[in-house]
Image (cartoon, rainbow, N blue to C red):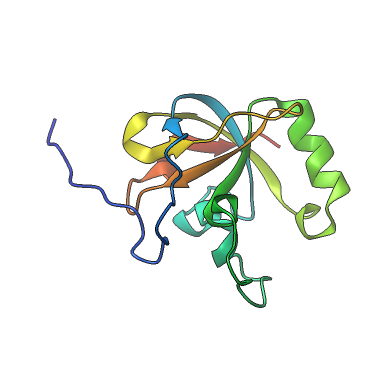
Length: 128
C-alpha cells in the first residue's frame, strides 16, 4: 500500500484541529445529500452551502464535520434540524488516515476534522 501525504485544509485556523482530538476510528453515521455520498457530503460545517458567513473567533467545532455513533440519534438530529430533513443517512467506518475526532456527547454526536482528499466518501454508503 502506498503511503499518502494527507493534510488538513489550508483554511483551518491555528488550533484546529484541537490538541484534545483523537485519531478517527470506529463506525460512524453522517447525514448526506447524495447517494452514493461524494466528497462535498463530508465538508466541514463552515463550508456548508447554506452558511452565509463565518463568525468572528469561531470555536474548533465550526470547522468540523458532524457525525454520530448511533443510528437512532442520527435520525433524531435529522428530524430536529430543518436544513437536515431532506438528507439521507450514510454509515461507514473511520480510520486514522481520515483525520481526528472530538469526544462524543450524550447523544453520540462528535465532530471530525478531516484531511483533504482522503476518499472518505468511498467508505460510507447510504442506509436510509
